[in-house]
Length: 231
Image 1: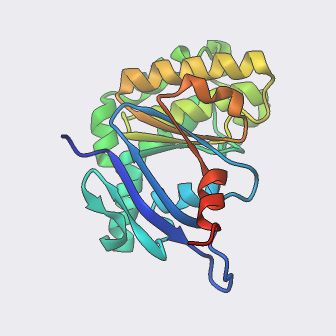
Image 2: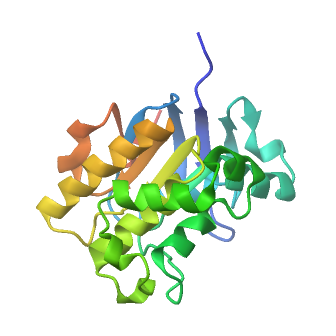
């Protein structure tokens, strides 16, 4: 059997000074190209898990392997390179640079990775193609990012995450500010472009109505409940 792209085993993490772990006993596998829905209420550790997968913090127990590499065994510099090369991130607040236009913001997605720059080919063309594929009107491409609507900023953020064909896209509550129709349209666009890029998607949300769109669902609340049951 081929190895999962992302393989998390018995993961545990507690912030320094906090006796209660934020994540306790999480196991998860994400296959290449798959779409996984990660559900959980506020405070259940969803954003902490994304930070662990991104190598921003290291586990206090268990392990995270990405394409066979144990992230905790990598130096800080190699974790930074791993994150730039292999992960595209859609932040909840989008984190666009407000003074840049959409094309320039999308290009930031591969600025720190030679691998993704090479995969993108002509980067400006790739950025424009992604913006068009995400249905952002061309007359918005020369606007400052802070002049765009929430939905338009979201599409720029998704294009930035996808440029350069990352292996895995991490999406942190990207639809929380959208109504149902715009949410559904965005997810369809995201899935189509992730499939085109060959990217797996790990989608974090508290909105469980979305779960049936994904290949697999992980419930953080259930994992925490199981961890607190006495043996």
